View 1: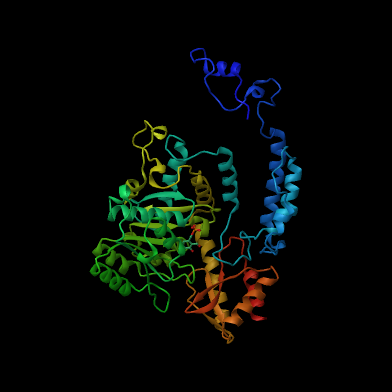
View 2 (view 1 turned 90 degrees about the vertical axis):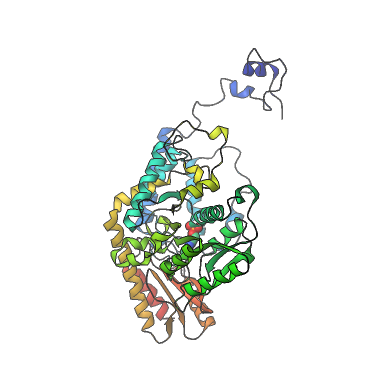
Length: 497
Ligand code: PLP
């Protein structure tokens, strides 16, 4: 690579710099030339308006009739890569061509999560107001790392997380922030808990004595977070669950006692409101008593189930959560907010800050009395996620969200009744939220075969888990565009197999 020419280098560093001193490793002479290109190399405004309309029209049509797409991509690994060039273009390409390729190459390999017949994993919804907000977020492209780096982003974040606490009836004094995922939220919780248990861990790392507790149904993200925080897997206990898949508070208390007797240092428990496999609810109140008696940090994972706290008839799901040290709920699961938007709450923000804040010169600020969210987690760069949460909460309002959730729950309950009334099937878990877990009475292979047949045509997408040692089909109902006919058609597909 040619070095900066001596003449330009001299110009760049000014008269005070000694001639010949190395300033830059790149030859910028062409950039100074008058024909170096337009002042603004971005897409011209007229073109942006034209394609902006095209894209919004495309989205409107997609949202209006997503059923014309098979919900699950039907292809083989490598199908798309074979059709894409191995290297990025050297010269820019026209937008028409990019959009054409999006339709012809990308769309056939898309699995449509934002689809009324997407019942796999946990269904999610990117609602229209959320999509509009995402567009504005991209346009502003702010970084909410410091209050100073975008006051609106920080203060809207403080406001919207407080609104969610209010909707869920949780302590208004809690500190809240928006992160990308429940996985990162629990990492923050584990590191803060480690900080409280071993303040010296910030300087020298954790001892080998710290022990964390999850149930056999806790989401894998908790165990991953503990591993990442230096808690070896051998110090992560999997507490047995009862017949309804809820963590046994008695078994937890016994495990903690036994670890203390063995000279270990129990420090962290994760309880779940709405487990991934079956939407079971752990006895948070009882668990919290054991935690406070023994000084353990209690994290409650409400990534999926937490949102149901907005329904008066389901608010008891969150009983005891007010005693937690931290709590996570994912508006990108059931609050109609597009991925990614996960809320991390804590009653001990000073511990989170003590674990994560690190002063560096280039991020110092002269602003006092404001939150700098970068001090409370791993990420420095933080998207303006509060904007989409704000749009969605305002557009639907509490009552709108309540109506959507009630409809999903009613559909799940209806499907659960059909299944439990059919002698060929067993419900594998109570239907208490939007998830229906069931299996064929003919065993694992029959259940697996049934799932494959349901999914084969691409009309529906359901997923699986294992409950009580048996292969189980999961039907998660919760997409904003799911209608009764979608669930009725699914029941037809199940019952006609
Ligand atoms: N906790 C529960 C109960 C989940 O079901 C999931 C994902 O489905 C997670 C945590 C992880 O969420 P995220 O994808 O936001 O990390």
